[in-house]
Amino acid sequence: MQARRVVITKLADKRLQSEPMPAVNSENPSKPAALKAWAVRAWPWLLLLAASIGFGLYGRYGLIQSTPIGLMCQSADPAWYCGPRHLLWQVGNIGGWSWAAMLGGFLALFFGWRVAIIVAIVAGGAGLALYNAGPAAFGLLLALMRLVRR
Image (cartoon, rainbow, N blue to C red; front, side):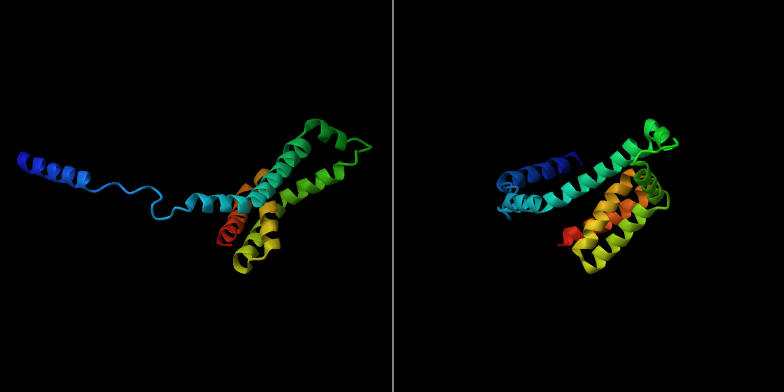
């Protein structure tokens, strides 16, 4: 049994020494250029996603959950931003961000409409921060699947 192991390891060592290892990108030397082209094409979409997540985070922590703003909006003379704050809360409360993201994602996936991709990315990014994370992420992923196929 021991002799058999020695023979197998010697054969494996001989094979490894006789065959050179191929280079990592030997079959496709233009892979870094293709990756750079993809990054250039994806940059506006990633910026749009970051802006929508930023909008959602500001809406959640800057307007909705802020105690001083909540107290000001309950006063007899509310500020101008209390109406948009209440609307933002209502849309999140009924799941508007997730429904918009899912509808936009389905339309983007099946029809490939650029407007539907934009709606799904914006509503999905905002919904991730505005209390609709699960369904909004589903719509966002549908739009990203279509975006990858472009």
